[in-house]
Length: 305
Image (cartoon, rainbow, N blue to C red; front, side, top):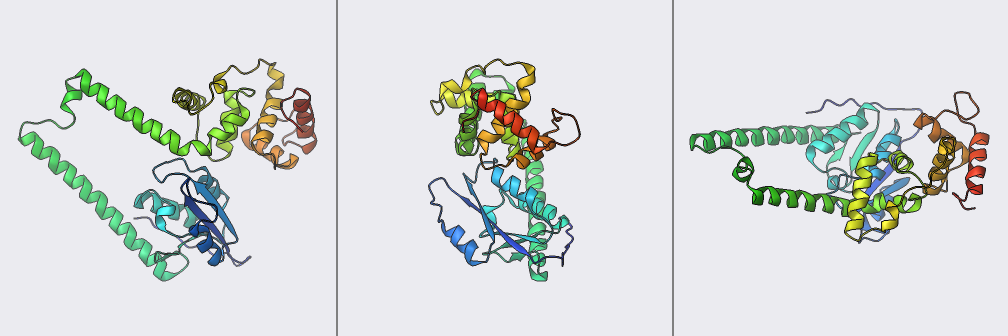
């Protein structure tokens, strides 16, 4: 059970930050959003996607941006976490940074003694659940061995082709299901940038938005979506060959296309965080250097005015 420490900040009033996860069929004025607004949330971040999907870039970015004194508010616990252990992990991390958590329909508010007690009870339940699962698993294995049976799938142990095929098909079905449920969080950016920009730059832009892609996994995902006719085959075309000196220009163009609202200073900050070295020397990127690369990208047609 996590040990959490409450840190308060008297320097500024609490900000109530709402998080709502809605399905793709819900409207923007979802009841969750109305309830969060009524609770006094200053800002509300919306995630569209299935609860089965692990890809939650909006939540990932929000958790990183919360600061001491903030209060993360959800309508129900299941809107935030996939499981009890995941919920406790998130709350523990927030409390270490002085961020409180509140669920409107559950008795959990880490800024109050009653809410912290409810959280400790929830942690005890989760610990008991893990212990019971482990105990049942051990008992099942012991009983199977006593009957002369080995744990696991006998078809796989014996390398039967039909068993191997069935497991492979099940894995592929699960993989495709996760891709489809999370596609709206990453596929639009891929469509914006491919094939004009390299896979490497696309991955860097996505990961700056809270994803955790590698080039290999993203290419495999896009290949699968194309094979299922859920994406345009043109996304897989080869990127235009350019000189190595054009790397920064293409990266700045990709960042701009993915988020046109960013200022030159915002882009400079992203380049610093990515570890890219300024073209004119120095330790930090300046807006003037970003502007020069953007002008060059316009000339090459990578970015439209």
